[in-house]
Image (cartoon, rainbow, N blue to C red; front, side, top):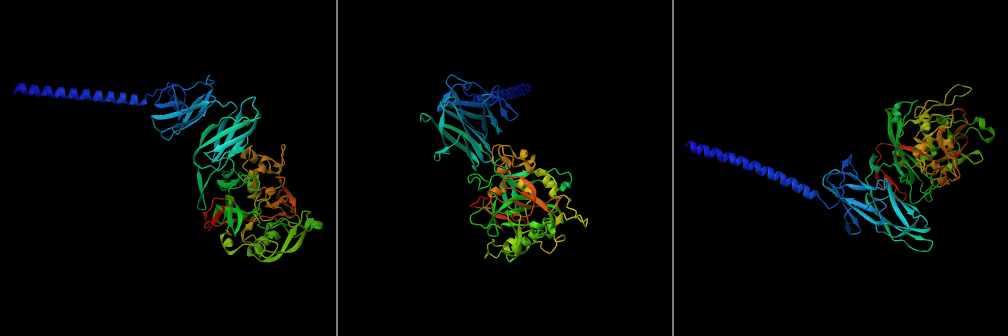
Length: 551
């Protein structure tokens, strides 16, 4: 009986040993299987550091190298005898690859899983030209790099197996869809010899979007589009520092293939969206969609030139005043234009002569038809318009603060100050229906900055935006869709809603040369309004042929 118990204990002990040995074997086998999976034939492995992959080290991300369909034993060295250069690459597990030409190695992005395999493709260097691709937002820039000593007379491109076309040394591909794109290049030299094709691939990633009046719109970081605008005011309430979203970029009339998509149908016409901007209401600082009428579309009539104030003809300019609350232009826009009727108006010619006239906004006269009932219902009449004055040559950011400031002209005889806000309470004559003009800062924030960048433009006084550097206008002004040079009223200075602090005869104009200066008498008028928050963008993409639709 005792022997049987001993034997049972011995069996149990052997069973535990066998199970333990089995587990050890299983663990070793699993490790060996993992290493077998991870062992490709490549000679180089790449350690992961901060989401990037360097050329040397060890990790379980592996690379396979190809020349065409042929797999290579190792990655070609820089300046190799075979004259091979990197063509493109791809990874599994949703990772992507970028080639570092200086370090001669790959950088893997979006690496979130182990056991990721990447394939790198190399090709013989083109004897005439190479091709590099860069992207920003939904735009691709292709740059042809000619070989020294080769005179290239023709550049031809193809994108995503489409038609070949003749381009330039630097070729832009605008408004590309999210995903992978392949671009090919071939060049012709001065001996009429055509090179072999060079193929490169690049990925367009999804842009961040913001909802504006019910429409998801991508946020731009370059070129044309809707930009985030931050403020850092010091002389007015910090409530005005709320982030705005403003459209910026080239006008359609300046570049029909690449322009800012901010066209909107309003009043059965084509207007433009300035952006989602900060405004003052009885409840505080809020945001509204601001739009402005455009004169640059088809046969759409323009309003023309008007004077700010009916007081003071050219021979009596000292009687002119820039008080918006009593302005004859304010009365016209919020009276007969708002009502689609006819009546008194004050037109100014280019020689600073103004005259009383009769304007017909019924649709039967020289002027365009005024607002219809639907358009009138969309205007937010509770917005308090700021009419702050300035007496210097500010930058865009300084204009933004002065427009919303509390400084105004002081009447020299009465010592009364002009009002710095326009609302039902401050209006004179009962002509407040929410129609005003653009601000100088609206113009300043509407540039994409071109080759010098938006921040550089913002640091320059708007009075200096006519600096030429060999061109008629500065890069800032040329890349601004509110530039009056590109409207139907070419050659006309554009009126803004900002009076001069030092002279009651002056208000700020956007000149056709691109700068903003204070001046006397009339200018080109483009009405601007804020839309109610109950208004929504229901369809459209903002292009000139498919504008946003409001309801």
